[in-house]
Amino acid sequence: MKITKEKAQDALKDLQETWDIMFKGKKPKRSSTEWERQREKVNEKMRNLEPFVREAAQRITITRSRGRPKLFGLVERTMLFLFVVLVGKSNRYCEALLEFFLPFFGLKVNYKYIERLYSDEYVKLVLHNLFFLLIHLEGISGKFSGDGTGYSLTITKHYSTNPKKKTKDYRYAFRLIDLETGMYVGVGYSKRSEMDAFNKTMQMVKDFGIQIDSITLDKYYSSRKVLKLFGKKTSVYLIPKKNIARIGKWAKIIKRIIEDPVQYLKDYFQRNLSEAAFSADKRRFGWVIRQKREDREETAMFSTALLHNIFSVRIAAQ
Image (cartoon, rainbow, N blue to C red):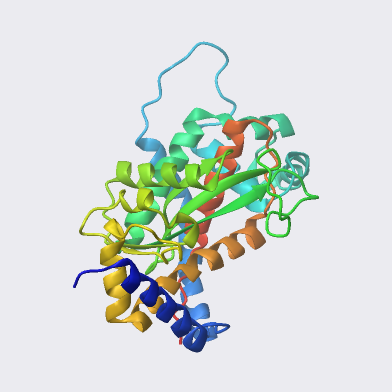
């Protein structure tokens, strides 16, 4: 079948009508029983977190350097960092909290020490290794959805409610999520744009050697430039823009839309998992980045994605 511009326009019109009839305003129902059953998986991950961190740290070769030795070992520093991020409070608050738990944890540090953990290169390496270990432990389906979001640098401006999202006020994140496990398999950070964060995520997935069998993306990424990133073996689910001028690489997608618009929309709207994950992450870990240095901001946003994978609970729709 030869895909012409006219056929493409008709296909997009039919797709919009199908969406209005079958999908507009509808949300999948969730099973509370399945939720409770799978929450045990989260508890198991938390119980095994310290051994996972230790394994991730053992993969790093540490060279001796001049100066005073570190106050705590690498495993202890990483666990302290994860505790601070999980608490989601200011460094001064965490300092006071650690004083309260001193008889149990044996850790006494000030807020400046906590802040420096965000730029500790060895801690960042452990976090990277831990991210890799967790996704391979859970398994990778090859079916992904991706989307971008933003985090505010100030408590007075929320990314989702401010129409003017200036880069000086926000930092951008893109995360690629596995549709079967609910785990992030790639993340990207940028102070410039969501597209820059997207490109960094794709590079991370490539470095991990992860095969993308299918990917669903928001309309923001609907361009030939994005399509060129994926080979013939990857099924890409995008909604082409209405003013599409040249068919080219869109032909394969338009053909699938014409053959079965209902199934195409069912596959496309699996990207709702990305939006649900962002919402859950911000409610659980916060939507404000407290760090002022760019490298520490990146570490903070990466740690949110890592904690998502620790708390990830995939709930089957009824």
